[in-house]
Length: 393
Picture 1 (tube, rainbow, N blue to C red):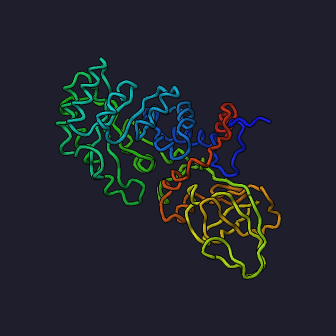
Picture 2 (picture 1 turned 30 degrees about the vertical axis):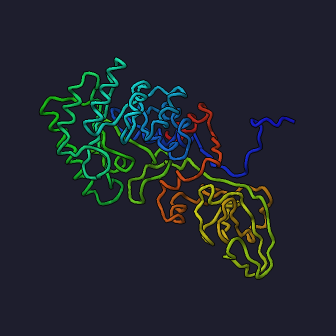
């Protein structure tokens, strides 16, 4: 018997990533964009919990220009795996990170003069001219230089021989809602900066403003590149933004029944005795809980078993949740349940999960813990391409 860790039995709860769906989503997005507009795939936070490396490899095959990330560690994982595409580090960088960024050809967002000077000095030491993007704060009040104070910073960058102004960008604070007044105000402010650059005959290769919501609803703001994150993964950023037919969720969460209990009337379930059986009930235990990222609710929500909804009963434990399968007599030990995703003709969506968490879909995707293994399916390139192309015809 081989007891090497490579043959370790897999836990009967997992996150499933459908790479054929990812490929199709990317093709639909790419088809929706004008040919000349580049696609920056946002793969920060392990590609919103989907696994950054697999996502990046497929995104390259489907025409992504590069990738947006948040931390140096995230970028280095891709570089060390052989990803050579442009990697744009969003946010601010510590001085200690700059040498790593230059050495590994990472593109940095610069937002203030001191970082410009330090980055220029490091780049000169490597005898490189490194590309930078300037973040323009147009109203979100997060990272970036104010739109009415941006020109001096841009001129400082142009004065540094070891730096190359490759991009200018901003970020919409409300691009996916029906009301677009503030988004359009932000875009107008960004255009003030662009006009000032044109007047000084300063050219910029990449002007970009749009996240997923902006890509869907603000076509006049596409410019040279769009930054698409959550939409790649088949989740629309709001209930009111434009839909692209065929976009489907890439992530599902599944578990197998690990135990079945038969309750008599009046017996209780779980911590705090939050559920009391009104009659004879059959209860299935799934080995997944709040320690894996499931919201710690009580008597709320459902899972799918044999294509039917099984209501959650009692309180969610760290490693277990309980569901009532009285009305699903065919359910047996080790049957597969869908926690999030589709089974049969029904679906528990990421938005359903967000309501349980009293949060948003972004948090749901990124909060599934890594102790839930990521299981990629439909990863055969040829088969996936045939599937996608047939769907797109």
